[in-house]
Length: 550
Image (cartoon, rainbow, N blue to C red; front, side, top):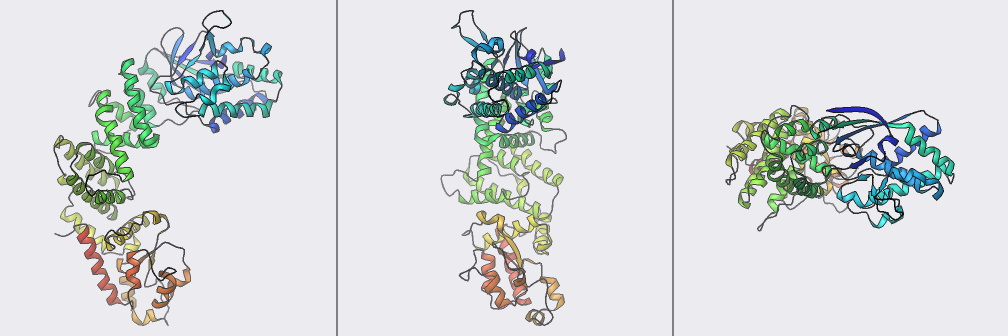
């Protein structure tokens, strides 16, 4: 059963209620920006004498008549507790009265009785929020554990803001507290089971941090666990998320979905993964067999750090270039391979061929549907191998793909979209240097320049050596393109060849870091014959390095 009603903040902090933040929730995550905005919005509404102020939703599971689990709204709830603690703590002792009871319950009537916080947070935040709710705010800075200082920072910020807006006026502080308690409200949704509360959680989220896939999937996974299992699997989840960060965890979740269903997504990732739980895998299997190992594999491919006993550099070089591909569709099969395969020999072959395939699909302009179909075949083949050592046959380029790839490489490369032509030229330059050069650090500043200029003056040497037909044929080909990493004088682009080499392509010492450009500097002249010879040579390098022969 689901019950929804409007409730004032005073009703939320009713002395007959206690709240627990489940382990599957994220830690307290509001930064000073969000806490500060909440204060400013509330104080502005108070100063303008608004009669009511809506603070969003609070989704709860009813455990007993007095105990509730917070499914959605913990960030607001905890920040409101911090704000009330700061305001109440600033009051003179004789003014605090029953306000303190909003945030904690006494275990008995004795003056020294232990106080139990109204909100029990996750383990990582429990001590910090306990100190806040028992008005021991000055002990807070030394107590924060995971996410060090976040609660303490918000306490300090809200104290500063209250001082700036209210000053030392206990009368105005009391009025502001009463405004927050009596004229601010939430829409409270209470369910007697996690399943229905979880459905509401996915659609109700106002003024909190944006919900991400992991926020939505995690409660669904943990719903099936016992209390003891939740503690164990929450630790596994937190360790995995700490290794790759929240954004990385969302990416891992998306990639795992593709490993299990290697097709284009039709619904939100939360819905698709939730549909897998119970039908294809159990919650335990999803975390143990897929999510945790996939997180390890994600860290490896994302950081180009494949660990091998002998010569890992070629594998990591392939990973480096894969990470420069404009899309991440290649990642699920790459991660799945690492999750199943331990042979370094197979890893070298796999990632060499994977980089070639990804480069081919990007260069030839394969759309997302074509890419997903192609990578889906690799996933299916890896899964069918069931742990056996394998480099999927589907990694191989078909004769048609090789022919199309070579056709693109021999075309007017410069007219391709910027990311496609830059990848090809920078990759080629490294091939020309035989792997001796690494341009990773320069990637953002690289420009592609024409040797034979795009505009040829009728009275120039260029016009004497090149016919208009030859100019049109070679202008945008591989042979006529060079790489630079510095800002250049645009007028110098049209200089005669010797002067252009000295003042445009060469660095301060007459050299260039790019092997492609160094080759240009070593040419005594630039004629159609030189371009034709160079084109054949560069294509031969690409054909050899990417194994594009018959």
